[in-house]
Image (cartoon, rainbow, N blue to C red):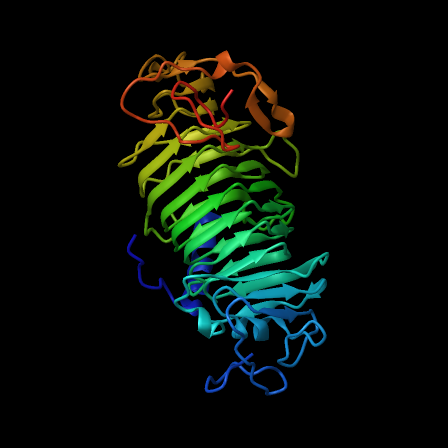
Length: 403
């Protein structure tokens, strides 16, 4: 894949985010390098690749040892490909890693890793990062996490957003095996102005609308981005939608793949979770949208024809229109006020039917009855390679879980 130029500067990104939120209804140093000195005016020495630095909530100086930990920006300024930053437990101040804050990682072939000290539980209020090639693991963020344009190659692995959301505004980003929960009037994961993003194996759940500020809560929202893959996630109980693609600033959504996910709207309608949709996929700026082997439940799927659309081998709990373009899918219910039975139900390998799930109320959408997810596929479309749990998916199975 050809790496695009950096999308926008930090100030432009902030302005773009504000505009998009309004549109969508959602919002340490080294010798010879100036501006990277620690708070005491000292310069940090560069560790060898594979070396370990230590940081703490109130760390200072440039030693970055277990006995004399530094702060996080100083440790990042020292980081080299393959090195590790270990975080002491406790609550860290708001952390900003601006462009140029990781000078040895600009063109790194290996990331530096930021992880807890053994047994520690580091917690951040907020992180804004424009530093490239960092892998974060084992940390908790309470407010929000911004990966802005310079954060190329960032990996979030087994992190937790508890009460906040992640805003991706960069490229070559991976977010995997993490949990996002408990936010109010904020998205769990929002991808905008980005390229080459993988969202895989995450649980995003229970985002409400309690702030009453007209910024709706989605589990995952995508706009103005290209080459985004959303695979093997569990999305549920977010006030507005489980997954939404939206207009943003009108730059379009190109090459978005959504496969092998469990996606639910509000399982129980309450003031905290208003219903919404399991998926809103009607943004007409989308091109080459591939949606296959997903299980959609507890809310409608909204879908329109767009260039290059593939909507194949999905289980759809409720479809909002009678002419939604789909193939080889199982449709449980539809809008009977618009039509008695949609013609699409008996065409292109689709069929009507009720699926027996193991425990829909708790989000376990694996089939309890193999026959309820079996289809007789037509056409040249192909199944996803693996289901939500990594098992091979037979070609004659709809939904995100192999029987």
